[in-house]
Length: 80
Image (cartoon, rainbow, N blue to C red):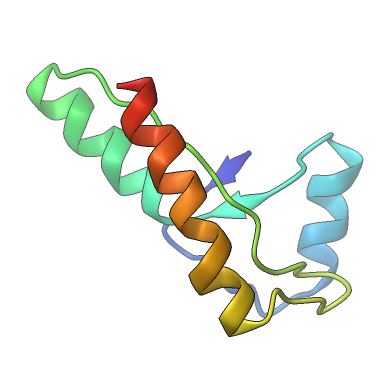
């Protein structure tokens, strides 16, 4: 997982370079979460659900995201 505060890159080859390094996904919310946790000495963890492929452009339809992402939330809450 590569986390950054600049999710969208102007250069599409950026994602290909990350892939060569073994990075499987990109997100931008976790960068902020981990930064705040570090500042306050708190523990933080992220759980990810994949919705879009930045290289191929494939995307999960909105209806599917709405119905299946609730399962991810349930898993997260049960994990806590």
